[in-house]
Amino acid sequence: MKRLICAKDVETLGKQGQKVFYIDEDTLVTPSAKDAARACGMTFSTETPAPVCCAAPAPAAEPAKACSDGEIDKDMIYNVLKALADKGLLQGVLDGTACSGKPYTAEHDACGLKIVRGNTVQYDVLDTGNPSDKVFYQEIINKEDGCSMNAGFITIENCQFDWECACEELYHIIEGTLTVTANGKVYTAQPGDSVFFPNGAKVAFGSPNKMKAFYATY
Image 1 (cartoon, rainbow, N blue to C red):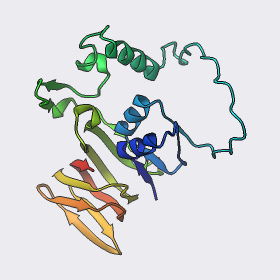
Image 2 (tube, rainbow, N blue to C red):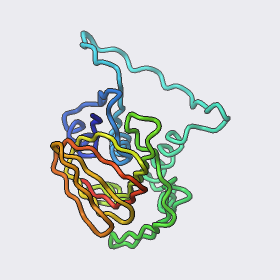
Image 3 (cartoon, helix red, strand yellow):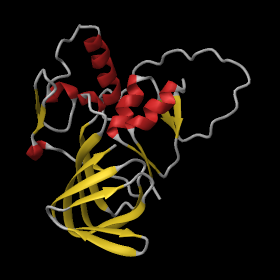
Image 4 (cartoon, one colour):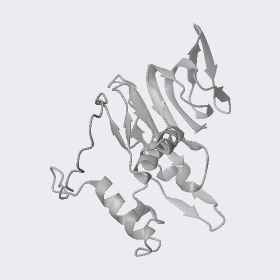
């Protein structure tokens, strides 16, 4: 069963002064959780934490490493641009899609309004533990927008996988058929239907065709 890490989980650990979030191979980390970790200087690690017996000197900063294709790591570029923008050296550089690196086009207003153009959304692979599963998602609303919840789109095509909700989740079906197996019973949702999952629910998501839904988590 996959465990989902949300931005709230990172923020809670950050308030405790932790700088390393220990996870295992069956853990999924949302984009907003990664952003929250970068903001507070936290890293994710799959290594088992070892007891600390004495303080060690901080390691010297390593020079920027290039990827195998000769390009600089995109996370490093993002962190550098964001640091400059925070200091007022790159006013508005993170506002546009091209500079922020966001996988969709959006319009913003000073009041906090945000409009995401649905036909521009680019999806990431959702790791279900089975490489053959065709499950994709993209988060479009999160803490960066001043929102206390996360929201986005998800597609499931001709497959089924187990899921454990790490927060409250709400899905509104846009197209296709969503099947949800809970306590041995199969429920079906069609376009126009909405499905709510409480925190801690253990279910199996699936679709006999290609399902697309808008989701919100809190």
